[in-house]
Structure formats: C-alpha cells, structure tokens
Amino acid sequence: MILDPDDCERFFKLHKALMLFVNQRLKVVKPPAKSAKAIVALPPDQRLKVRDAFLDHIDLIDAFVEKNPYKLDSEELGIVRTWKDLVAGEFYVFRYLKKYETVASLPGPIRRSLGRNRENRLGTRSMPPSWPPTRRTA
Image 1 (cartoon, helix red, strand yellow):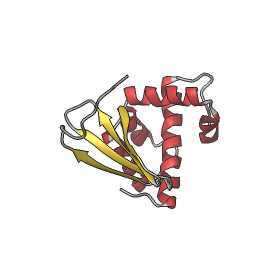
Image 2: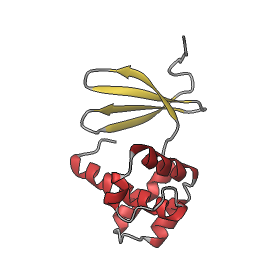
Image 3: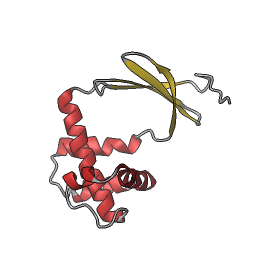
C-alpha cells in the first residue's frame, strides 16, 4: 500500500478522531481531550498511553464505527473498520537505507516486513517465519 498526500491527511484525520474517542471512553489522560487538536497537543508520553490503551481495546473500533461521533462518511468508517487488522508489536530495523528503511516484526509465526520512505509511504508484505534471521548481541 502506498499512500498519497491526500490519503495521509485522511489517515491522520481518522486516527485523531479514533484516539479522541478512545481517550473519552477509557479516560486514559485526565482531563480528557475535547478535540482532535487537543489530542495532538498532548505530550508524547500521554499520546502513547492513549495509543497503548487502544491496542488493549481494539474492540473500541466497533463502538467508534457504530456510534460515529464525528459524523464520518461510510467510506471513512470502512477505513477505520480495516484497522482491526493492524500489526502492532516490537519491530527491529532490518535495513536502513538513504531513501527508506525496512523493519521486521518479531516474534510470531508470521513476521511482517515493512518498508517506509521519507514521503510517509508504507508498504507491507508477509514473510515466512524463517526470514530474516535475527540475533541480539552485546
């Protein structure tokens, strides 16, 4: 998947709305942010707490879509629904090149290889469990 600038803008709009909804439901950050601008203005550590709470409650996507508190159109709600298939976890940089980097998720039976360049483009594909060999050294 490669996102053009308009799709990136749409992603951030939808993501901010979902994170605002998550925070209002779970009350992770107090006082709860009341707008998308307020959720973005939170310090990074608080935004990460909201994101982590969301990852522990992926089912909130269904509640968000059902309630549709920000009056999103059906196409935008469809995009949010697809986020239930997100890949979250620990990622290791496999290769860092001048124009992009590739990372691999670990552990698990199916590892994901992701490539991201400086233009916010993201590509993903499944890799067999034996690729790539990974070692931690000291």
